[in-house]
Every structure is written in structure tokens, then in C-alpha cells.
Image: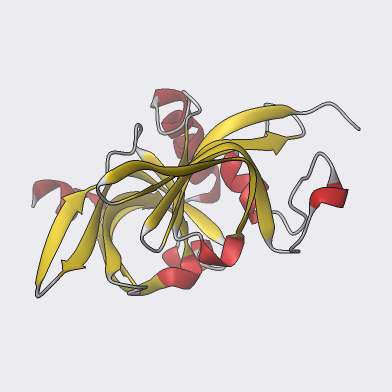
Length: 196
């Protein structure tokens, strides 16, 4: 088996959160590039049960109100069920990543924009997401996951006959959001959104 490194990620699926580590070929690969790849890297491909899954190690499964519902040494999570993810990479969403994004945007003449997004309802919840992105939204949503920075994420849960809105603590300001789970969105200029 080849050498690889591991990175901690948090994957959000309907009503659940998976915190664990994924294998990467090297530490220069961004998590979003790994999960957008047509061939997800597996250190040991013989362990793969699904073509559209990522393998997590040392996994903690959480649900609303229970920080540790259960845990697994290894667990496969299907990519089609991941609504959004964040990683524990210190550079995610910080000044160096923003500088990288700004440099790439300047070269591609991308514009900075704000988005408000509502995901589809799965189970008894959906997500309400505010964030900034670079480039044309239509182009970004052709990817499996697209990056948002300066993010605030709220989970809206039905509890009995009422709804609760809970801010999700991400640990940084970057997420990868699944384009397949977006139900609706609104976009605005960065300057316009910043003044509202």
C-alpha cells in the first residue's frame, strides 16, 4: 500500500454529522478537489463498497442534541448524501486561502458575490446558508461541491409542530456545498450585500 496523509473533515448529511479523517495522496491536495475528483482516492481500494463513497477513519457520528451518538473505526459515506463539508485544515478559509482565491479570480476575471442558499428538505431538516463565492455561480454549480467562504450555516429542524433554527459551529469560514442539494438561492453583488 502507498503512503498517504490524513485530514480531519466534518461531513453533514440529512440530520447527521460525521467527523473523521480521510486519506489524501499528499497534503497539497485541497479537500474540495479530493471530493470533486472523478476517482476518489482510497489508500486501499479493496475496502471500497460503493463507487460514490469516501472512507472515513476514527469517525464520530452526531445528531442534533447528541454530540456522540456512536463511533466507528472506519465508515464509508456516500458522496450523494453529503450536503456540505468543512475540514480542519488550518488554511481553510483563512487569509492565505482567500488570497489564493482572489489571485485566481483576478486571473480569470471572476467577480466576488454573496449567496443565500436553501437546501432541499431531507428528513425533518434543511440548511439555510449565507456565503461568498468567486466566479459565475452557474459554472461553480457544475461541480459536485463548490467552495463558499465567509460562511454562516443554519440547520432548520422540525421539532414536533414547530421549527427551530440552529447555527452550526463550523470551526472555520469555509465549506464545500453540494450543488445537488440546493433547492433555491439568491445572489447579489458583494458591495450590495456587504452594506445590507
